[in-house]
Length: 133
Image 1 (cartoon, rainbow, N blue to C red):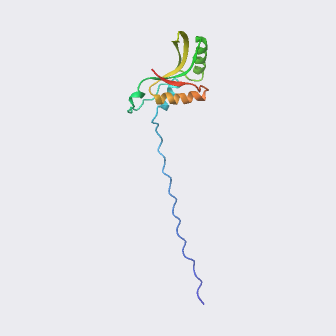
Image 2: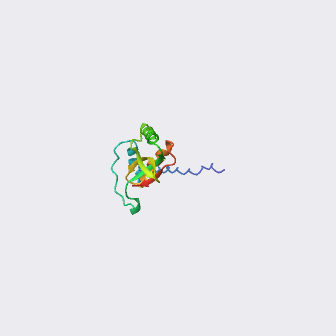
Image 3: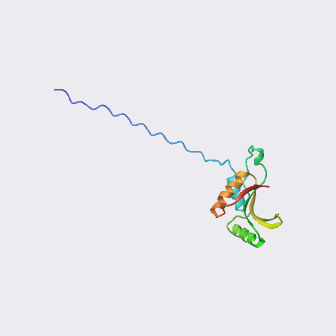
């Protein structure tokens, strides 16, 4: 008679590797600055980064253009009520006709203007475009 076989020892379970703790993501765009400017707060200091020559300067978002100052001012007031305190109306003469441009800005970079444009889209302003001044 043979003695009962003892089962082979079970391998020790390996500890699960712990996932690496993600480092807080620092934004490389000017999103935080744009949001602060849209809300009328002073923007946090920007870290200087090399920019292509074409992207330098002040940028504004043109939201709409109106034929009467009253319409433009009414829309500007609605933007102010929504917290967009850097909205303004700019008068222009195009082809001999008066036009009142509803604009937001200025922004220090195209990236900041793009971030503000995304925020304005959430408020229903889908047709705006970025203009360099």
